[in-house]
Length: 601
Image (cartoon, rainbow, N blue to C red; front, side):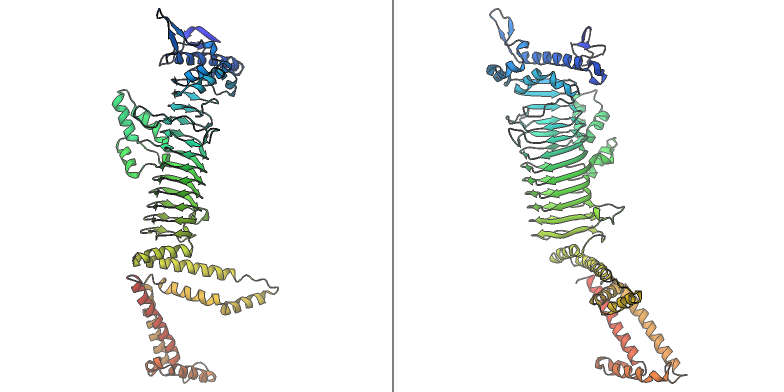
């Protein structure tokens, strides 16, 4: 029970008696200090004192009559503010609906049993026109927004459900739509869902708030701003100007984590205003450090960002963010979509439409370590770009799958870096064609080479997969594999692709075929020298019984008219010379192709 000997020690001033042996009254003490056996007594005391607090606030709104002798009498006594009296008194409820009150510095008990004691006070609050909660702490009990509730500097220690209000949106003293939560801390999960009255949110929601747990937003229509993140240096500057005792270091530590979100899920919503989830640019981080503040690397971190079945009718910005897992599924964007300089470890866009410019410039996808792991592959699956899209300067460390996109305009992949790991041939072909269409032959050549390398890997993989046979006899298995290797069409295709790769890297290098040409000339010269030296001492090669075969091959080579003139002085070695000349022609052509691809294709 309350004590009459001491007054609450709240620094901002409180005239209530302390509760029990504590230093504060029931409104300003923590229920963590209350023993479980005394909890019901404490909750009853809290309900009583809180009802008196509300009544005084209501009286301050001229909720009284002035008599002939200027005596002041309340319109209603406090004992009339009971649940059953309020809901049946239309005159009282109408008068309450015109009032705006402020409730501040209240530590609401965390106990779920509070609902059993606070029905009357809660009914009064529900009928008030507007309630501003300032510097309050909420536990199990909270006021979820069905009415005109606004919160500033409040802390929610447990999960909270927020519903849109059917009432007229409220403006601040500058004429702007108020934010429902300003500088608040949410320690538990948040769920934004429709109320029984409406699914439309007409007020701004979160201003400089700190989210320690997950956020779920579903089946809502946003007419105003969802998140407003702080301009850190400007906030500190403004508060320094109005408070000489202001601690900039303490304020910086408070507001810097407003950017951090654990998990954000947006399901079946629509946004008519801009959706901005921006972090802080590298340049701004440098300004913060130059101002003498230490910024943490993880303040821009979002563990999961899931967007499902959502319609964005205005601009979408997710810039300067570090996101572990991004899923953008069956969601459409009507205006600009911008993710400039963000980092996505895992990203998948599927069954979505971008109607305007889509920007992924200087974005880093995937990971450096374990980049071969296909789970880090960036995927655009059944995504439609109806306008220009830009991936300028993007880095896909773990590969890119762009093969199932629909493009109305050619995307910009200038200065993009894409790991060949997990990237398929069709993706490289699309990128190559985008450079071809803009006349950028040098970059087109670069991705043509990547396309052919991917094609080579594809052929090699198919070839390896086609040689899996099961036979009873191991010898027959080996013979069958050898036979298939030389009769299978995949063998020739594989041979040609690998030969092109090793000779010039599909035209990537003219140094390699030049080297092979010089090396082959040296070998051919040595063959001519050894041939002449050998037949100075012997009349036939190895065995006279096959002399007729060598003569047949040499005569056959002489009958090839384009080469016969060059073989007149190569008596006895015409066939070998023919093979070398064909080889020289291949190498010379590879040099020409490689040189052309460094200028044009």
